Length: 245
Image 1 (cartoon, rainbow, N blue to C red):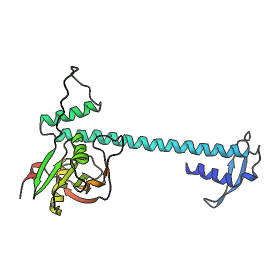
Image 2: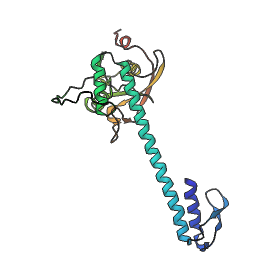
Image 3: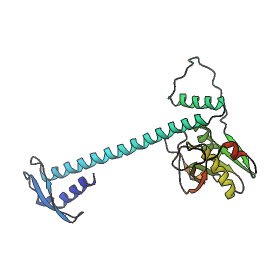
């Protein structure tokens, strides 16, 4: 794609030498320090030949940008579906599975089995809670809970954690003083809600909630973040993490 633009720029630099009817022109390639031959359309005048190459470049650029956008969309789609598989596998109660089912119905991945219209009752969005050394460690068990925790429950200076490059639970730490020990405990909660096997080590990113951003149109549970640090922990059973020392 860049080669097309370079060719157009080079042709522009010698356009004064181009005459209609020429099939090609030899020009100095100032990008690569060599002479090149640029082929022309004999039916077009010099300006039209130049415009033709730039149009070709702009078309290639748009195609490339569309491909990148589609790649991001597919990545989000895969990430979203993998996170739901993860939460289904980690569900410990039938209620948790039903909440995931409701989420997938709303997202139109599943069909509504019952067509009877019911009075809509606003359900409270829950989440997991672990108390440790005076800190509250809150964790999502599905994507609705993840979004709720990250975007509504968390205050701007709460600590936020997520697995690096893996679908996982969003974890929020609420505490007046956050020690390295608390960060490690919260990271272990994140690690449990990943697809890795017990005993494997995983990198967990953590930052402040104020550095979290939800892109417009992003899937449930998908956010971007910055100013993060990383801690490596071993994946353990949740009941082992919850045990007080």
